Length: 124
Figure 1: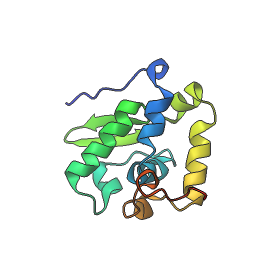
Figure 2 (figure 1 turned 45 degrees about the vertical axis):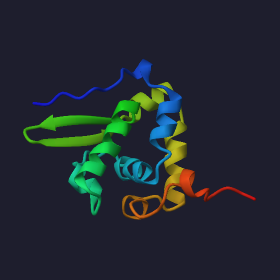
Figure 3 (figure 1 turned 180 degrees about the horizontal axis):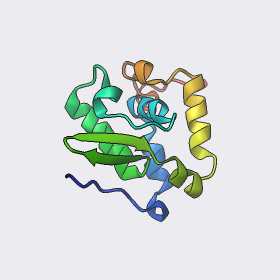
């Protein structure tokens, strides 16, 4: 069984969390997992290449946003809701609420360029 690195709750850093969620695809993954259920990369990825999905999940996991659990040949991903809430109260609820309101769901986010790249959402 493969073991994955997950930072301890006390070691989760705000800049890493914000960076991980700054990409539209990763934000969509977090929104998809915000119901508290576990999902495999295939369930989250849709049309995303496996290597690209692996990259996004690694960034989320190493930032402390995701927990990955191996079972046989499958890996199940879930949000570290309790850990992030204890570290940064209200942050994840707020960010995911805004993301959901703005349409960053699992299906929409895959095809939306990152706001950080396009400058979308900035006022003139």
